[in-house]
Image: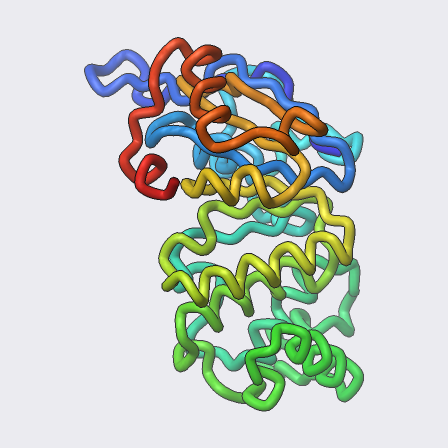
Amino acid sequence: MLSIREISKTFNKGTVNEKKALSHLSLELPDGDFATIVGSNGAGKSTMFNAIAGSFITDEGRIILDGKDITFEKEHIRSRCIGRLFQDPLMGTAPHMTIEENLAVAYLRASSAESSSPMHRFLQGFCRITKSEREMFREQLSHLGMGLEDRMTSPVGLLSGGQRQALTLLMATIVTPKLLLLDEHTAALDPATAQKVLDLTQKIVEQHHITCLMVTHNMHQALEMGNRTLMMSGGRIVLDVSGEKRAHMSVDDLLEEFSVNAGKELDNDRILLSQ
């Protein structure tokens, strides 16, 4: 369970560039919830993700994950239990390392393995991957349906954007994370590839019962994926819909709800075009 309690963040305090990015934001996300998030540029969506992931320490408030206060934990510590995908497919993988080496590094980072772990061997300069690990990686890759299980020794830099994003998704979930953050992870892909990655996302999240937050600019995705839709404005959550109300909600209904709760129209071209 994720519990965000009254977090705030102001950047460049005391300067002409001062910006209040998060304003007393609170959110309760029970185990297994899959919430989509929409909002205009500058609403605070990615900033909230950065706060959760530990990219910076909030000015006030608390962040609790699975009953543990992680408010002041460093980012690399949080990454052991928080998976994250970005909009850019080039982020999240090491291009000069092979597919299996990338998977080995991700496997160790999220696992509790000790000195015999793949990462320990990698850091020692050996990068030996056991037969059982290789077989497990191959099986997991086969579920992506992209033929990557037959290219495990290929450098990741040779993969297409869609293949890299699918691999990154697998890396983020190869050991089930306590929380998965998806920050417009299909926005840079062509429509057909984006849909394939979204289908994989839905499949993996449901199969492993992963608690998930997904930022999207596509209003239909926001209502169709997951079980809950959040809208952000001014660094806070202004709308939270789920259940029967969400099931019967149209895009127009969602936009109208936003204007009522935020006190303004949704003014982002990307969102309006994605309708």
